[in-house]
Length: 528
Image 1 (tube, rainbow, N blue to C red):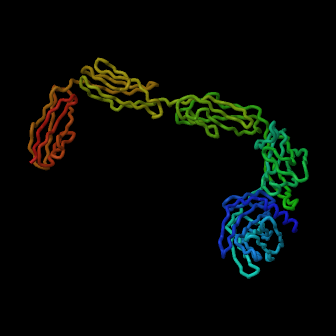
Image 2 (image 1 turned 30 degrees about the vertical axis):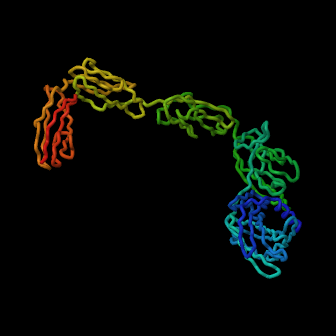
Image 3 (image 1 turned 120 degrees about the vertical axis):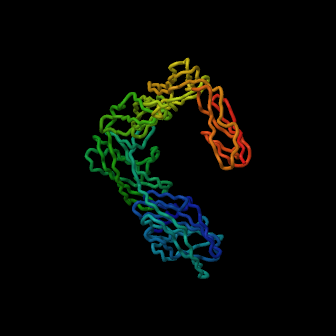
């Protein structure tokens, strides 16, 4: 047993301390704690926040390293009473070793109450104790350091560490020109090699696998030759760089097979401890044909259309990867649903596991117009006037382009932007037409321009707070009788859109009436 822990200590000293140290000061002695990954089963990983992966089975070793600075070199020290705060997480604790500088003394006994003597050189010494994880969770450790000369005891507490469960895994690989490649799509009639996925660094930089057995109850799955490279074999990486055993498997037909791998680990002197790993692998028939549901497809802007890639036989791997050649025109999701983004043309592709592809040419178009609306359907203009009409096409994603026309260009014309120019008196119809022939019309009446504007008052005196209405008359008769009202000083008087004048405070102001062609007249208002 002592030889075992001498070996374990030597391995521990070769490992780099991976956690960020935590320093505790107590009575002139500083202590640095760190966590070492002395695991020899399963997958272990040390990360800076003191989380540790613990192994399959819950009985694998991990060590807590303790470095002491400031010890009295003339004194001997001993460690006793190491305890875990959470016994549900830690199954057992051993004091493993005490060492200093390049020399070390190993002391081991399964009874934690036994005293371990610490030899001090130049005020520095180190010690460690191993833990056997039992279940996931968090814990910290307390222990006592005793000065044998003075009898003085120092109690210390380590930082909290968290242990998480991580299982060993195994995967299938197939041979290619450049070695071994991990694959998730297994085909019938093809031989695959299976390897355990164990990448913890324990012995000589790698955890070692002593051997493994492979079992399945599926009669459609044939286990081929079991190759042995050596007695103690290393795990193979995805690149196939390491030597190792292989278990080769071939499926007779498309099937699902539950496979169990018994992995026996070698490390730190314990050979033959098994871990049982069970996974279900699906074997598929080789792909023969692949078809797209449509060679071409038209999609409305903002709408979605479905494409389907059909693979035969039906027992082949059916999953495909979808992509769009131009996502600005159309996008496609993982299920083959194509959405029109902007008008244009793009190619939608479905790619199978073996690289085979099928495509569909997708054209994105705007929806057809269902209706055209104008800003007004009736309008009166005076001869020589210009005014704009606005057209909107429904639905909103349809093309908003319209063509404009006049029923009588002698009376009024309209340009491509909807601007109407009145030429002569009379009535005319202005039409806006969509690309697919939908129409909207406006009746425009052209009259003579006003030549004169008169008011019913030229001047008026008001009391503060009183009001009256001005009326405007435009000549000649039949012209546009509309005027625009304004005031020279709204603090004195205001005027509404209908000519109502209201006195606000004492003073003088003018009310103006302006015709559509700019003819203007005023009324003087005096507020007392």
